Structures are given as C-alpha cells and as structure tokens.
Amino acid sequence: MKRIVLGLLAATAMVLPASAADVQPAILYDLGGKFDKSFNEAAYSGAEKFKKETGVAYVEFEVSNASQREQALRRFAEDGRNPIVMAGFAWEDALKAVAKDYPDLNFAIIDDAVDLPNVRSLVFKENEGSYLVGILAAMASKSKKVGFVGGMDIPLIRKFECGYVGGAKSAGATDVIQNMTGDTPAAWNDPAKGGEIAKTQIDQGADVVYAAAGGTGVGVLQAAADAGKLGVGVDSNQNGLQPGKVLTSMMKRVDVAVYNTFMDGKNGTFKGGLENLGLKEGGVDYAMDDNNKALVTDEMKAAVEKAKADIISGKVQVHDYTADNACPY
Image 1 (cartoon, helix red, strand yellow):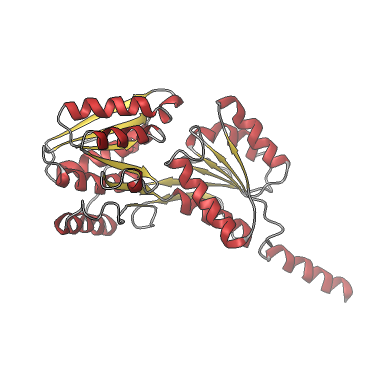
Image 2: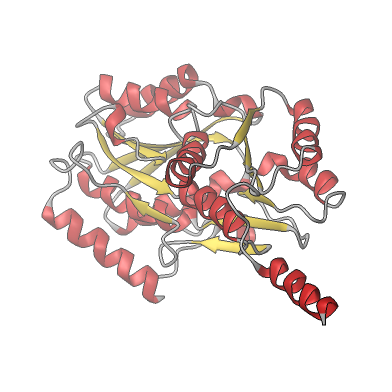
C-alpha cells in the first residue's frame, strides 16, 4: 500500500507547475544590446514584467559578436537555466546545436522556426502590422511620398517593407521610397547611417519615414524630426523618442512572447512548436498614446481600424514576402 501511495505522489508531482524556486529563466539578446529602444528592448521589457510580477529573477546575455552565441547558450544550459529565450533569428544555428543536447530543458527563439520538441518558435505577422502603419503614413503624408528604411537586407525585413507598401498604396501613396541599411548584422546598430538614408529619402520628397532597423531606426526617427517630418517606429512603442514627431509605431509584441514563455515555464505549461502571431493573436498592432494622438485624425483612426478588422476577419489578405520572396504591391 505504501508503494502505491508513493507512486501516486510521484506521478502527481510530475504534473504540478514548477514553483518560483524551480524556474530559472534566461534570455539572450541579439546584436545592438538590450537598450536598443526597439527589438531587444521589447524582449527585455517582457522579462522585467515577469520578474516584477513573480519575484523570480532571470539571467541575461548581450551578444557582441557571432562567435559568442553557442558558447553563451551552452553555458546557460549547463547551468540548468529553464526556459531559455533567444531574441532573434541569428540564434538559430546555436540553438540547433545546443537544444538537442539538453532535451529536458525548454528553449524559445523569436523570429525563427526550429523544429525540435523542446523548442518554441515564435514568429510574427509583421506584414499585417506594417500594412496598418502604411495606411497611417499615406494618410498623414502631404506629398503622398513615404519612405521605408530597413536594417539588414533579409527576407524578414522585406516582409515589413512589403506590408508597409501595400498599406500605403491602399491609402493613396503614389511612391514608397525604399532602402536597406546594409547586408551584415552591423545594419541593426548604425543610427548615423539610418539618419543619412532618411535624409536622402526626405530630399526625394518623402515626408513620413518608417524604420524597421533595430537600433539604426533611432537615427531615422531623429533625422525625420530634425527635418520637420514624421517618423514611424517599430517593435517597441517608440512614439516617445520624438514626441509629436513619430506618427505611430508598429508594435511587435516581443515583450508578450518573452513574458508568456517565462510564465509557462514557471507554471509548468510550456509547449514546444510554432506560434505565428498576427493582429488576430495580438502579436502586432499600431501604437497610440499621448505622444501621437494629435497626429492621428478621426478619419485616419477609422480607416486603420477598418483595415485591422478586415485583416482579422480574413476579408483583406496582406501578402507575406517570405512566402515567395516577392511583393505584388
């Protein structure tokens, strides 16, 4: 009888949520640092929210070059950190090398898909959120010329770009000037070059410029504000970086993805697999606050809300560049 009771207790223990003492979360940021005012900082905000609400501390690592990735990830795994979240697609190779060696640990990667049972792949429908800010950009533009500054020239950033072009043209933009910052990871953290590109686009007639470029985008927003034009932020709510000069921000809820992953680890509800987060799932949206409310008219708000509802219902399909490496707009 004693053996049966002990067996039942052991079985019960296997399904109990992890306690605050058991969970030891970790996060690894991408190039640009956790205070990049964009992608990494959104991830940091999610981790901080988790810590504040639960009292559970986490460890973190800010990568400065690619050679550090696998070593840092493996060190966290050796220490038993769980779950471990990686911010950015560039962690893919390191994750594939490490996760299979630690099948009892849970991992999550943002912006990439890794098909392993103990990995949660968190990707976003950036095209949908970018479509919405494209509508606002076109409606706010006096010249009907708007700009786009991407970071590293990769399909993911083309996905932002294509959605933005589609939204802008649907709302009357006659031209969308498009440039990428570069073709190496340095393109994510070069605000000076971002500012130069934005100035060139403004000289060509753009009066609203959207930056999807990580830390580089801070320079784009600064250049637009200095020229008396409007910028559009990305990933985090960047409206406050240049109050009254940032039309809106395409919010990519990396913070929610990190927070939910940490909480699932704490509660024993972590599941691997692919999560594709768009407007319907609350994964992307446009930002409104006191910093930009005077810039968005009732007409603009009505138009973007209608488009949002139509995308969620399926009435409007926003093309995904990564599906065919093409943009039809």
